[in-house]
Image 1 (cartoon, helix red, strand yellow):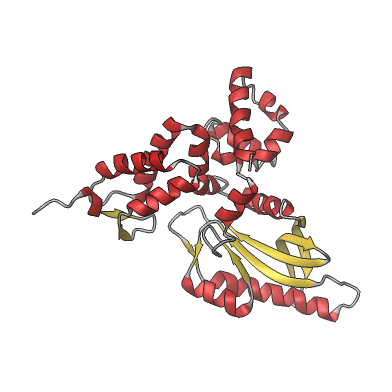
Image 2 (tube, rainbow, N blue to C red; image 1 turned 120 degrees about the horizontal axis):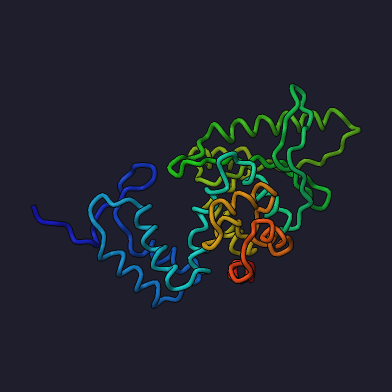
Length: 283
């Protein structure tokens, strides 16, 4: 049997689905990290020459990341953004803190893990975001499995909670919350039915690639609010130490750099870490 050209192999996604390899998508993902066109083309060419039938998208990512890291560690950090968000697990609590910080730097006043009364039961809300006396309830759904979609059951459930709280607010005139919207935020993707339900129920859905123009990825890049887990210099143990002290953003580490002393990091290495973090935070 004639061997397929490297350019036309099928690759295996994290979900297990097979799709044709796309040079265009690989190049676009590299360009988004800030790399120049020529460097992106060079990396795509090298990765393409090493492909084989059934290679996983994770293996392709690992190779492209390795080549990009040799070019510049800062751009490699930006390139690993999606993976870095998964590294905020496994509990999901750091992801909630991450989303609350994105909202804070977007002009909202935020509170986390609020207990709000509903007509039927009380509800713990991940994030309450206030802007101009209008309040939004945000539920964060973190998945550690990259192949998992956020299906329609999630927005259905969140919408019912939002309605229960909103109904209570209408009945209790002493509590003027001015609720305007419910959000569901996930680090993965929403299924088609979930998106359709969100649009119908006027529930705002935010994921890695949705909605176009205001997706989680685009918000992070636009604000320069990268999670501490993007660092290519910090070790896993060091990242876990910082997350355990609510240092979720690179920007936070710049303000609380004394934590690097607590970790016993040498001055030369500390300078490298802070240089990387400062470049990541520059928008």
